[in-house]
Image 1 (cartoon, one colour):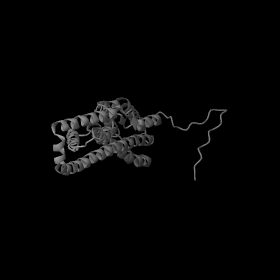
Image 2: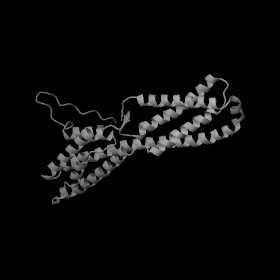
Image 3: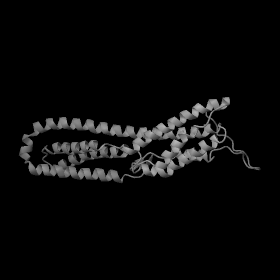
Image 4: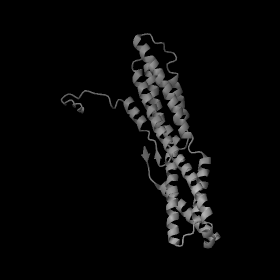
Length: 275
């Protein structure tokens, strides 16, 4: 997870408060204070209905956006795990299948990090990574296991390749489709109507009216910001990190391989295991 700042949040919340104050000011200019007091009973009942419906709608959209973000993080982790498993299991294959599969794993991880992650910020997927994933899925078409070891590892590799392809498709779907436009229209219209009904209540003190309107708009704006943050998992100020694939690349390069200490140096002792 990567967080790059809160400028969008400040813009969304600030704009929402400004619009809310303008709506309330226009409402009080159109209707006199006496007319507002006479309509308190009717507007109060309507505000209770509209406010409740809008609160439910806004809460469901926020929860859905958070679920999308959590699902995207899980899919990325599962996809990178499958890629690492394929690479490690391929070490048990004979040549040339072993070199072919492991090389495709290296190329795919590098393309996902360097090409596809920036593209997903623009709601796109790259053709290069898709071709590499397809080549990986077809890399063992000419292989017929003969030894018992090969017969054991072969189905596991095929299963991991299939899971990798499925996780890639899930990640692409999440990156390409964010919050539907109809949801945004419903949220914005609902916010305007809610603020309008709140402005129909006549408060004798103008300063108190501004405070109440500002706090209401602040709560709605913060929820809008949450939808923007979590509704687009691979774009915006809060996004899913490519760190799992970075770890895969390090594994493929042998960064974590155990190497004996050079002559004359002591071997590092393993970390103690807590009981």
